[in-house]
Image 1 (spheres, one colour):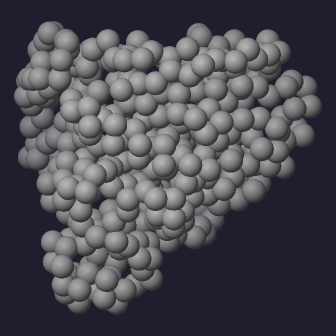
Image 2 (cartoon, rainbow, N blue to C red; image 1 turned 180 degrees about the horizontal axis):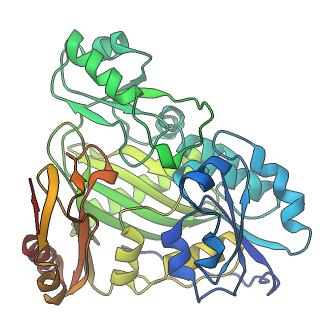
Length: 427
């Protein structure tokens, strides 16, 4: 299930070195705060995002954070101009991608500073699903039938009346992704409008960016993801996660369970698939979060990210394996040796909370859920008077519960019991 890596003695960076994050990720900073030296982290963030997310005082929120440096990095090489400034007073130990949109700039900055990283070519492929389809398919990774689309006519022609997936090629968090059961001129036009107009105001700068779009074959089968730590093209840790996705046109994830309960042959098939993907993209060092659908032919690639996965998957891995993945990733990107477990100690799961669309009138059962056996986290992200929307992306979920157990069945039951205990009433 999990493979260790034969460690090679390496020289650790100087103790006064700093870690540079491209993209502000509060969850990451919170997780490492107190475990890395005070003031040892510098974050590069877009000026517009600093303003929108009110990050001017972010350095006061974390002991590890020294400062946020404004610079363009989304579809921009602006962050590369900071290389001399960043290394003028303190050496840089590692460059870490904080967000999905920061993956290419992170790789480019790491290469410029002579540090381990994804490699620029791999990062560009991971941030553009069109490019990812091209390089992964050429490398023997199983892909659905696909084509880049530029308008409703392309969607209609590709679908030929049948089921199809329409999605942005270079966005995040399932934004704009749609599953269509059938396609005619009207549905193609509606799908194009929804997908091409999808937006994340706080996550992108105000300047004009370039977006691309795909239509893909609608695959049938259970969904999984593989989380892998990679050093110099070699997978040194891997985990397979079983995913639950809400039914309907927007494939938003409802829950995750890991390690996925798989037979040895299927487990090996996922291991083979992730190694083919690493080789095909030329990925160097870092972390991968690859999503797959298990078809009758085997694991088929949906997409892959070159940064820590969202949906609290890192926390689930840490709970199941006894790891601290975020710190391990920094060590990998700094060229330090790491020690990783061969197998999980337990299973872990998350379930995202849903509510009927409308205005929240009351929340009950939260404390009850928190007291249930095996429950580690039960949080509600909405409050009375707040509007709950139908799920169209990951941002629309109302909270989550996390549980662990000795086996998959126990853990699944515990997380579902916690989910059922919480009731979010809406009007």
